[in-house]
Image 1: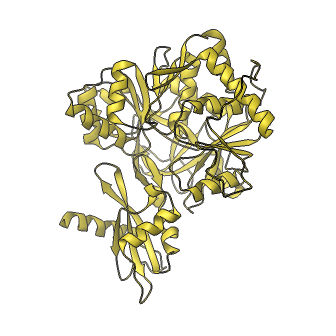
Image 2: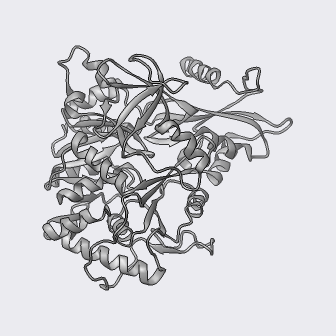
Image 3: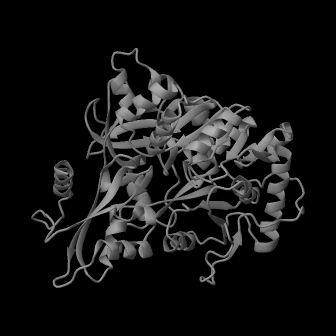
Length: 503
């Protein structure tokens, strides 16, 4: 079944319910949204020959047209490839080419104008009222719907293939475990719709609720507080750093969360003091989820009553966990031999269930490695307690999470190693108050060469997305290595902590 059938049914059932807002301005009711989707689907088919199975990339900030375009693609049986708008142009181009996208929709419609073989159009291009109201195309449960690119440890992104069935089960997990969807809710898209925030739209559509795009197209604390007061019943996804910023802004003006119904947080570690402060300020409004692109938003959940609870003897430990397995998920911590470990023992977090991806796009080797033994191997380390609560012990593969966004050190290292003055480099993350972690680069120069911090920063801006570039550099004579020549990042982390402690 096509996931877009939910919008079709919602529009037929509640045509006059508000569907899409931009700030406080109503853009479309559900009948108008349905007509716009059919118009745009007809436009995509007629102007760009988009057909079932074609990939259509979206490289844009959040916009009122985002939901419309996603559904127009599914109406035709096509596959959407939402691309993180914060990526560097070169990185976005790589994804568009790897996905073999038949079309890429951008804000201007001319972002890739230098790439003459990439077909491009504006996300909000005017479309005539040419589409008849029809049901979405028939597709199979295992047909691709969403191709989500997640960076790999090699620095090369991998496209997680998510089917219509994957998205349906993800949404059922949301309704069962995360939050009830209500017709009077306003789902706020302050985090990128290319990621988890966009994936959460389906439950809201099924309930016939409203979708709210901030006028800023991003996360602005004052704007969110204002929308909470005017629109009410806000529900939204936020990275822990966003929650921290919102609570800071709220306390500064004596605001206690009125008009916000649910904040779903995830995508990075939430420090104990931060969630304690958030609950103290806003009360029982928080739900934590743990997931990854390969099982979108659906590994574990810490429901709002458990986040807020202070009655259980182990409530503080439970609040520090990432919760219990979501309803459709089988969760295990496996040892190096692939067998489940007892409670309290640390191993790799592995997952089975109908939300797990079909595999990686055009990458059978990575698919076999990640899905070996019938499990999704997350690459994260953790342990379960006796009550089934999951605790993240560490993130393997040295991933850095800054502002809820994954940054993979090798991507940064490879960019720096292309600089003619750089001989060796190692990148780690170090704690940072606002963003959770920041990128630190230890650099060894070629003999007789050097570069300034400003020069390296400028170089990185030309190579990778701005948010991935190092925020601090350490120039060293050599990097610590073991007997096999492997760089000892544990030593570098210790050195980083010592440097921070000395300041």
